[in-house]
Length: 485
Image (cartoon, rainbow, N blue to C red; front, side):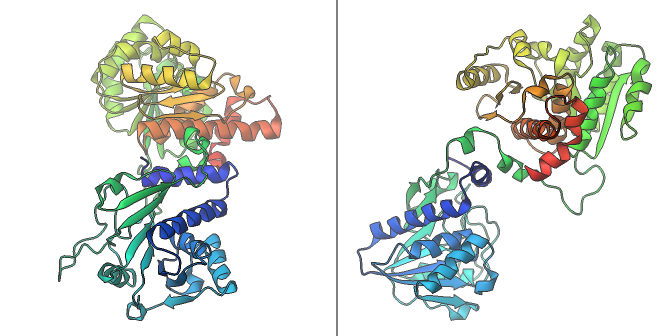
């Protein structure tokens, strides 16, 4: 099973792997044509009712595979309003091939006639809201027909994730205003809502490589958006808790969180290093704590600061003193928000009973110190990390040549990054980036996207400067990595 959001990400990842969307559309079209052939013998009349997006594009292309049938392609809208280049190309191919087409610009213009098969290619998965005209009238006409109805990907008007209608019932007749399909041909993997339908579902392999799901990619960024009408703070507030023995680490994490999209970042650090931390950037809001190390006496103050934030990054530059470990234990035991745990704070995590939504970012040595296991083979390491994540009940991002990201259930690998990123400080940059993303999305996705964009930023630097990069180079390229990935 795959959700519609994840399917969109996998589709984009496949394109990044060199499998163009046009090729996937051709494979999808072949699968649609195969379903039509299974529903009716050659010579049957087939009407393809098509929307203006890629769902319609699949059907435009499918018509070319149905030369043994009496085919008509009905486009709901004007040809110039077809939304994607590949769909427009396939519409033009129909005209050049002299395959019968018609355009429906008014709901009263649609006349199905009496076809043997109707292909519903109006709206694909991921579309929300009630059907509008002319799709609404088209759905009624399709449902009133005696034809066998083949839906492309998901019946129009049905939520592919739930199987429920996407809009409200018709006030006049109680109709759900969704296409009642006899057959559904969906792509790559089944969608959760299709099990709820009284329809035969075919899952077609259209050539998306397994790597598009296995590895992080640019598609994973599709869920990270910014509302054009948002205000300061709407895109995440992050608190970095660290410093004392070190000043650079909390600063790197905090500046990385800003570069990864957080609106406001505060740093809670000992007063002895507060001025140095502030000196790294005027963009940081520094809150000093009495003394030269963070310890149990700072718990109430840090809890108050954390209460007003969306995510906490705990550990950069914190050190490994006894008082520090006691603080980490007490904070996690009392905290119920989202927290990224890094560096010296990691070792206490497996022993803490916490309601916090925890993301741990160890390298492989730190993972072993936490009680986990590792291996050289990425797949074997992935399964070991998955098992350990399930045992401790937290999300893990284990750094390496192939990063492993898992919450004990889902698992993804990340292969962006390069040997130059073994330089000190890049782990702090990663923790800050994950913190910013954790303020906007769920823990697993934040860890996966954080690993991907941090590695991508490092690759951008290495391509320009070679392996003499430093951590500040990486954080400065984070916006580019998030924009261009």
